[in-house]
Length: 88
Image (cartoon, rainbow, N blue to C red):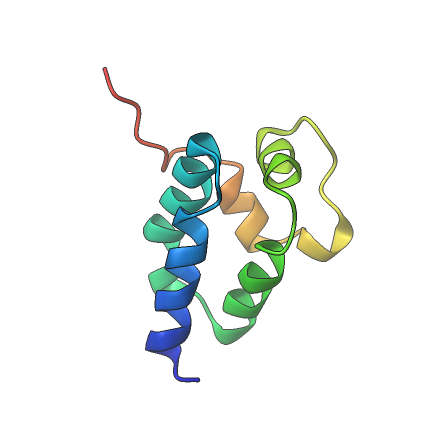
């Protein structure tokens, strides 16, 4: 599958998690960061999306330790939480 199609599918999966908070966090993260990802980072994000939303959110917020397989640039960026739009 080509990169464009792969990213399109990932964007859909990132924005359709089933819980609005997860959609905003994971989808917003994808939108903010995917354009600069390497093939390895895309593969890691694909694997990350197989995890439960509550786990991903807990890792991003520092409520639970990040498993070794997800430690790295993507999780570091996910933990910044500066990509989640907050309505005033």
